Length: 252
Ligand SMILES: [Zn+2]
Image (cartoon, protein in one colour):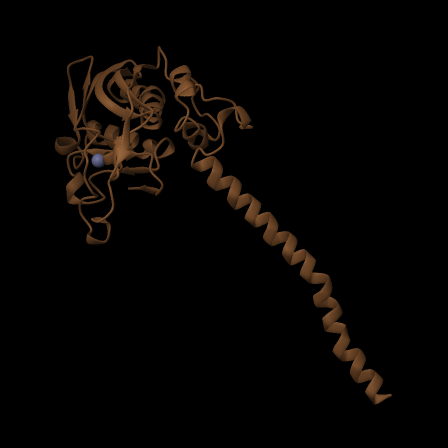
């Protein structure tokens, strides 16, 4: 009897474990599927024609899944030229410069205006061009009108493509910058229709309307870019906002 009881006690947990095992496997499988969907969508690996999401419309504010929908433009030249059109952006395709030793570009655009403001950029990735257009149209212009009663007429920048590694922290200096594939843009200043000039280096640290404007638009940029860093990040960014669509995520 004692022996029977003992054997019952031993077999009960093993039956429980037997029932739990398929449930654990199902959960693990679900997590794996969700993680795969996340990576595929985030990296723009799914051809747009198979995507469950509608193609990006630059003119629509507060678009859902905007990060994944911008990512769909990464490898799709046809979709890029279809999406990047007026009036939100004036852009034209740039011939590919196949990536060698971590430098070059593919599916890049030349920009002459974004969000109704003049912005002259020679070569920038399609993703960054889309991000800049949406940021200008839905964040920068509304805040300029709200704070200054005047629209932005031109945007100054400090460059896009540069075949170089990440600057700054030692742990990153062996890694190519997103600038090396024209997948980043450094914004330095804005000019309003009223003639007022607002620059990151002069106004970021102040307490006036210019500082409020810069802080609000910079914070909003995180919606469209994976990395959106400025003067608070480090001294190298004291005079510009760096916006890119790389793999990493960082907003500061
Ligand atoms: Zn930069």
